[in-house]
Amino acid sequence: MYPQRLDSPIAVDIATALMDGFNRHYSLFRQESATAKQRFENADWHGQQRAQRERIEFYDLRVIECTQRLAKEFKAGEQPMEIWQQVKLLYIGLLVDHHQPELAETFFNSVTTKILHRSYFQNDFIFVRPAVSTEYIENDDTEKEPTYRSYYPNFENFVNNLEQLIIDFDLHRSFEDLKRDIAYVHKATIEQISDNKLRANFQIQVLSSLFYRNKGAYAVGKIINGYIEIPFAIPILHNKNGLLVIDTILFGEDHLTALFSFARAYFLVDMEIPSAYVQFLRSLMPRKPRNEIYNALGLAKQGKTLFYRDYLAHQRHSTDKFRIAPGIKGMVMLVFDLPSFPYVFKIIKDYYPPQKDTTRELIKSKYLLVKQHDRVGRMADTLEYSEVAFPRDRFEDELIAEIQKFAPSQLEISDRDGDGKLEVIIKHIYIERRMIPLNIYLQEAFDAGLENPAAKEQVESAVIEYGNAIKDLVAANIFPGDMLWKNFGVMRHGKVVFYDYDEIEYITDCNFRTVPLPRNEEEEMSGEIWYKVGPKDVFPETFGPFLLGNNAVREVFMKHHGNLLEAEFWKGHQTRIKQGHVFDVFPYDQDKRFPPSLQETQLS
Image 1: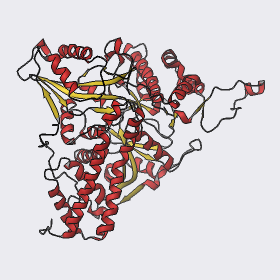
Image 2 (image 1 turned 30 degrees about the horizontal axis):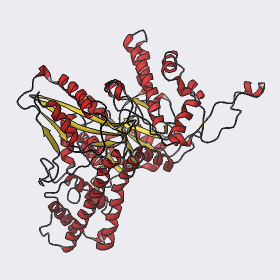
Image 3 (image 1 turned 180 degrees about the vertical axis):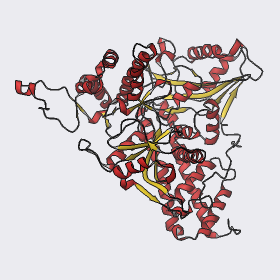
Image 4 (image 1 turned 180 degrees about the horizontal axis):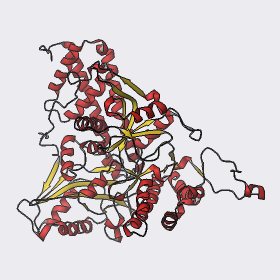
């Protein structure tokens, strides 16, 4: 039961301090996102990447800051539960007419769970369920931008409307030839319109802020024509002369989903009302979970909150059990899944074989590196949780035995809530989207027989994509370390993504070498490595025996990616990265780009 009196001065002060803490956080978050426009205009690519990386840390810093204030000024940990019930109700009152209520609720949870005992992690004290609707929140200030702008072209003024759409973003850098670019956009757009007819409701809706990531800015919107809605994104880039160009226009849900992929870095976008942006983006990508959209917008804590709520809902409406994940078991991570849920759960083991010279803290640092780095569409994002409780009766006994054997420090089985129901508590866990392991994907094709054209095509496309994935990682200054097929996964539409991070290094930290020639017959005949190998030494020519045992795989790999076995390939990229060059990695196929006159552009 909630208390009847809501006039406790200490409760008012705590609620107000919590709201002040959140408002400070979001103000700083928006400020960093808004200055992305200036960095893009100035072609400050390293500054853009630095901002993307540093912004991830903002949230935790503000939570710590707010927690410390509550402890110092209000002795928050010593307050009775009646006060905390009042605090939550008073905080709900502060969310009325707030423009980021869902984010403020999550911030409240982050702070209060650091103060309250776990037995109070219930809806009376924290926001287990949202208390404030985010539907139809809009900015009432007529002097500020709405969430999206609408344009109503006809055939006569279509080109002018498209040009105005770009001009309205107020980019302070000249275009090389905006009219030429708009002509390309106009032609491509007209081709998308069914029957070449503009219906009564024909309009173009575009989110008011550009989406910035590394070297690109994206206008995101949709075309509405009768009953048809066509999502689109327009990448704006710098050419080699530092002038702006429109590189292409991407149409359809699949292209937008790839652009907002969980395997890419988060966007920098200035949003007064994030829930309105998410609602608009959901209309473009209805199959994409809301948590992944929040993540893509840089609001990872909100993404975690929504993911966990989705997981709890799935758990209530399913009956299958958690099991050891199919595939080759890892030496560092213990992986399990729930068959009906499209994610895998990963625990760092307590014990590693001798060849794995690592520690728990080092592995955690690698996962943090990936979180903060540009993932270029080739490294899966992870959700990180602590003290996660699962129902014991939903775990297979074999899985419990596996955790007890390899990660006993991470496991607790108890009735912590005192309700007679045993729980499995995992101390620390990573969660990733489930993909088909590349080794299993290839084996499926081999089992079907390579005389089968579809199976042969599956092998060829997978091997080509595998090499493309490694080259994209190289361009992002990432050496994957363990490049075995089992450490890569196949996503929808066949895209290959890396997901095993315990051995990754920066390319610039590696020493790429060619295997020395033997100096005598004894060295030549030796079955052991006879030359000295440093801790950061990498010998690309030695990758072949581990990766290319199958002749069909070898043939495709050597045709398309043979240079991955050459030290000079790696050293060449390493040198350019050290010189400050930011490589171009495109989130769409090259054949989607406008004509060759625009090929000298930059993007990542």
